[in-house]
Image 1 (cartoon, rainbow, N blue to C red):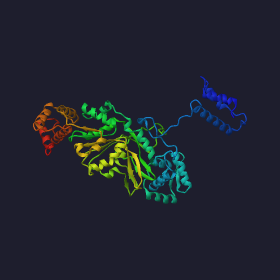
Image 2: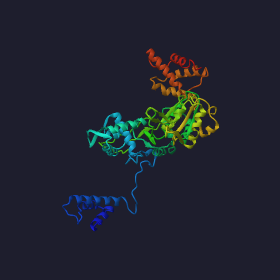
Image 3: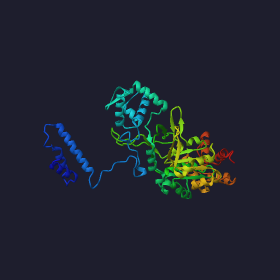
Length: 499
């Protein structure tokens, strides 16, 4: 039991009067229990630590306010603020010591030797969790000390028993990178960063499409479709920018998201982060020697993804692909595009039939989740949360039936540019390519090479024709200028087999 003097000091710390806080803390530091001998320094320290701990408990809990809130690493309030926080234990990370031990042994089997901090960096877990496990592995004669390292660390190498066990682990799966993230945490992250929670405005769209010439009517049609966060058909003649529009849709949403480097399914490893399709956007390094960000390094921050697949798309790309040599699964394109945009370009020209593709996605598009078949035979449910854009030069009604069209509520035609838009494109692009804009030359092009032969305008043609003239001038080593002769040459080349 605390003395009356101690209780008075505690009361002043919990509800201090003006100017008394420093005096109260000074009194705590000077307090010595009366029943303890003054010469016992260790006992004094223990009593002081106990008293300070009681003060901390009293100041963070109480009958009026209740217990202090605890931080939830996977449930932030807003999608833009969501970030994965560093786990405090293997259990918090959804891992077992055996799983981490497997990664460490396989890494040392490949590397030969490494410090404890190098191992922690390899598996992307805090050193405070890896260090006790390495000491336990040393006690079990799985690893041995090769030497010492700075900051109370050691250089580790495999012992004979560890080498044998590491080879057995590698026979099942050679993966020895970042520790996997559990599926439940990934589902929470997708929900927190989903497109459904964001509603881009007209200003957001204008900023996303600032480098394209988009008329107000097109914005009026694109806006609601993008806000739906579901899917749309973009159709129209080739060369009018359907793919360019689809690739820029993602810019209207939040700029960055967090994805796991890999997922774990009962011992199976599935890669999610793909440098070919994802652009990493690391956080700024904190100042000083210590990293205070406390971010779970098993996750990586990327630019919100836009994944484009075209005629090369097959049914295998829509399932988890298993590499029998390494024992590692690669996630399908729809999983990699979660919280972003998936563009099916040249829809109708894939190697697979359109009805096969649509039957595969007809339920995910409506239910917003998908099922993946794992190599072990297990089927898992994963989020299907992206804006799916089908871009095609064909009429949607000629490709799919009414049941599927109902699940893609927005069908947007990308029309040919008007003559005024065609001229504006020349005026915008000419200076960027080193030309001085020549109104009479553009008028000659329109009158003689378009209207006279009833050739339709396309959004891509000003850029393509200017490139033709530019390359001609560079070859002839003459000034970059638009003239009738050079325009005739460009048109003859560009439309040689297109008319």
